[in-house]
Length: 160
Ligand code: CTP
Ligand code: MG
Image (cartoon, rainbow, N blue to C red; front, side):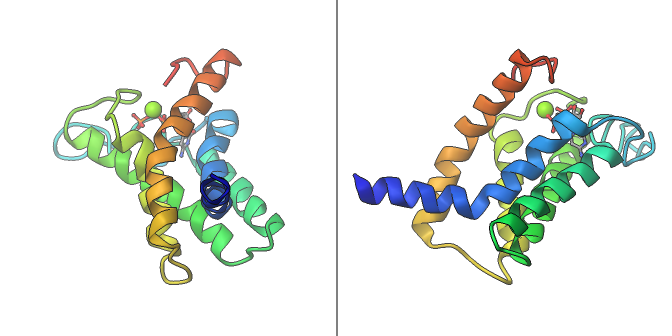
């Protein structure tokens, strides 16, 4: 039991900059979209209006800061950047299959940040298989839980 709690604590500590990078845009996002409103040949937005320059920068700064406060100067910013890029990739693919901004892609919406963060951090550090497994199990409920709190606080207009 204490081993499991220890494992969960290790996993959350490892991924914390990514979680903050993903949450910050909900609070600080807005303004011009990264894709500048442009569409691809399919007639759909490249990324959509939910991916903003300010949100991206806020996520990078806040996530990196959390990593630096953890004493993880190099991997912290990488985890933050990876989470943000994973989220952009998710929006890109959602647009390509016709899901408009704010539409859901269950599983992908919650895990793209994790996959992006693990990928970008992997040249520096790959966590143990148990930590990775715990992160895949815990990230979706944590993501849905924090989104629901954001909705209750009036930061988001959808509860997911
Ligand atoms: N956000 C932002 N910039 C980003 C990421 C997110 O400004 N790079 C803000 C937007 O206000 C967005 C909110 O955070 O609406 C929630 O993010 P998310 O759920 O990822 O975006 P969606 O609006 O659902 O858009 P998509 O369908 O593209 O995921
Ligand atoms: Mg969304």
